Image 1 (cartoon, rainbow, N blue to C red):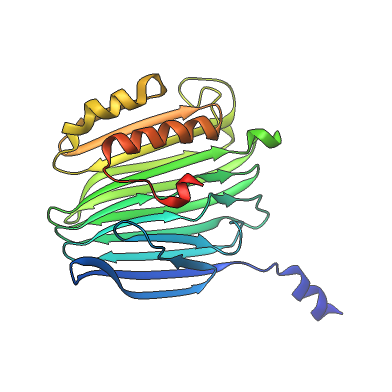
Image 2: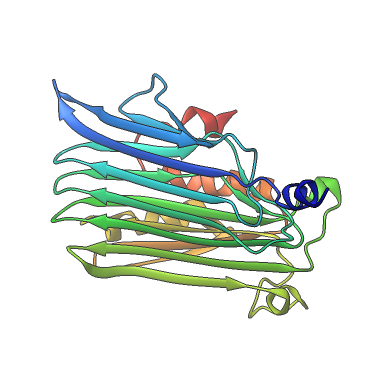
Length: 269
């Protein structure tokens, strides 16, 4: 009986590992190696260029879950990395879920890192650490969107433990660093210094030699829905909305304005 009690008290936890390498071969970017284990999977659908769709088959994240992602882009490659659907961080009773992701982008390569939204539910706890490491003249476009509960379901997030560390480096030197911390205090009130009552917000970062040349297009696409600035080979745009759907529509307009080619197909479903 005691053995049964001990076993039943240990809740199952999701573990996932994804490692992918891409190389330039026969005039195009192609997957060179792909390792996937546990709940971390990747698909390579037919698409203009090379596209990788990442997914978590566990259906979401909760306390104790662990996901590790490592992607390497070789010289001259171009990759669009996205997710099959929104990631979900559910209520946690046993510590934090943890996600670590690193994208190494070699000289002359470009990464479009365009995951769909992360939805944070009440009492979720998530530690996420992500880095895009650029080498030489490599470039990247990175979007991150967070949504606090689902408005259509009447969900309200009152308790939250989020640490989201985002980092872009070039040859080991920092280019963009954002350490986001959200807890109960940040959710309280309606202050402009926090979220001003918004439940959805996004950050877009473009690191490229011509980033400043795209600023006018970015501001025109944003209109009153956000703000953008550019300097030193970097464009940063921020947006907030009362719900995820209007933010998604505005973000899609922004991406289309500064990025050639169609959005990943999964974004358009």
